[in-house]
Image (cartoon, rainbow, N blue to C red):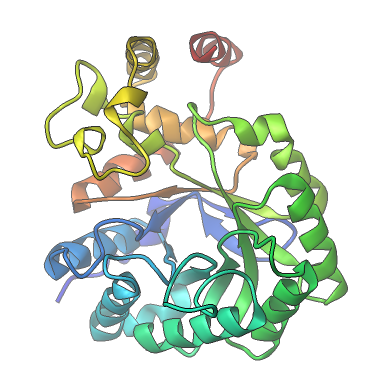
Length: 330
């Protein structure tokens, strides 16, 4: 049995999510990697307990996280129900559906059939009566928005989820989806999107403005740009890193140019002056000015949780620091 830290809420800062009454921790734990059927369950337990003991109450999953598909939900459910079940009401558990999950025409997209079936499967895998947030994982151009939003509304009204989330929506789609959900009486709580120092498309597109206008909270994934914004790539591309793996879908050796390495080193110098690691500064930068509600981290070992959580000790930037960072990123 793992011990529970009685002072865990003193370890984290919390902020209201959009126009709702729900407070979220500034740092959330994503189970995209390292929680599948191929990963040691004891290490998964250590990571989850370390997160909870440091006030990270938000655990983010999806139906197809693994490998194999569904195994992250199964493993999380095993850990929750074996040692943490009495703390269920202190947790925000989210899952998603939208990408490929099972063969045939009903295992993907945004149809009512797929979304409701997928959540039913997710609840069984985790042995839960409900999730706190259920996301549509990505827009589906082949399904009317009214159908997708209607299914999400009914899921909330059936008590299978407390809140609705959307993920990977572009500003125009998000605004229209938000309108429909408000008319249905089940407003969108939160939007999940990719955002980092090296991926600022959301700023260019005006996505942050839509979040603010619609009263939607926001959670940023891949805030460390698949590990680029860590000390891993300060000198070279190390053997065994994600960029070296031929199978890597999101980061390849060709993406790491001399220019990018130069930026990483300069940013690392700024982080050092702030008394932070590069990763800590990169996470804090995403949360600057409260433009983003919470940042989604991953972890392969428990020690990384504490390192990332400590960003709450220094989330503010001086005007000068932001100017220097902006100059480097250009």
